Length: 471
Image 1: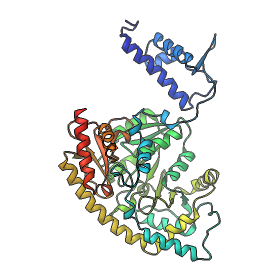
Image 2 (image 1 turned 30 degrees about the horizontal axis):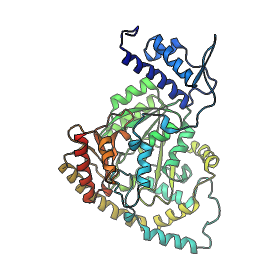
Image 3 (image 1 turned 180 degrees about the vertical axis):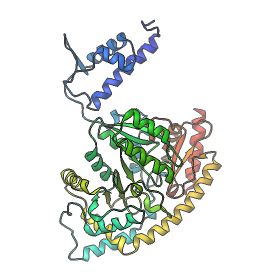
């Protein structure tokens, strides 16, 4: 028996807990090479383990070369910091269902594979003919910018269009308050560079888009999940997180939430913004699915007037993933420093991509394309919901628009296990814990209705569930 009364297995587990906690601090650069490691007493108090457990953990880390002991001074991080790897931060998942690996599977598995778990529409749904026409027209235009850098904030004509389109959703942003980017991910990255410091705390929905988690880990901040409901974040838990963790930022989708397909309710939006004001919280509203809506849902940026809310958007989901074009809309005094960061990290954005998007917006191609896509998505949503229910899955909420469906597997099946079995059939599913910072969505899968129109999807799902039940 150990001195704290636990058996050797429990003691070993506690030693591993201490080691993992220290390794994570080193991997995340919270402790840099040469930095003093928390004292044995401090680690004992912070983790609630015995002194002998910490001593054992430190001895093992010294033996592994992770830390060094200096007589009379304590323990210090040894050597140089290892190369930064996102996989070293956050929950350690099986590689087959890790968030970044899921993206790789969806991108690399090949055109013949089925991808009901991916986050984009089939290429056949995109306006490829219209894009070709736009490219030809730009190539023939002697004044088209084919060889020059874009202006620092981005193509003025496109920023004017973005401002007008935001106004249709109640967001009042002048073109001078808009910065163009190479997609929504770069937009979020720039905002995080601007607003966050390593060690800050950021609130995210639980579940949320998995790349939020990956990108925030890259910025070396701490993420805290708030449970999401069919009408928005759980406000009681949200307020509790504000009090306990004093976060700097909240990152969310308001309209067509990813992965649940839920829509923010106006009452929740108003109360959320009141809490944000009381606790000096800034908000990033990722609105990349806005154009899938027939009727605009409430926007935090519309209620707030861009005072403490930053809106980001992109045309990657609705127009083309190959034409990387997004934007940031923010309060006027933040625009210049955001442009400086953009120049420092990318020296601008794609001028050709911005020109293509602008042409498709103004010649009517984009409007006609959206009308067609919304009809297709509505049909696909109804068919996918029906088929999933027939397969025994429970729909968490019926989405008003968009492509995503959040569904619970029957019989306490584990979604990661189901997804792993489905890979054998060349089918990529998206297991729930990929989206959950608390790892509390083990029984859920996210389905993309636009990618679920093949019988093989449901045949593979059925086989994977049967295999998982037997294993």
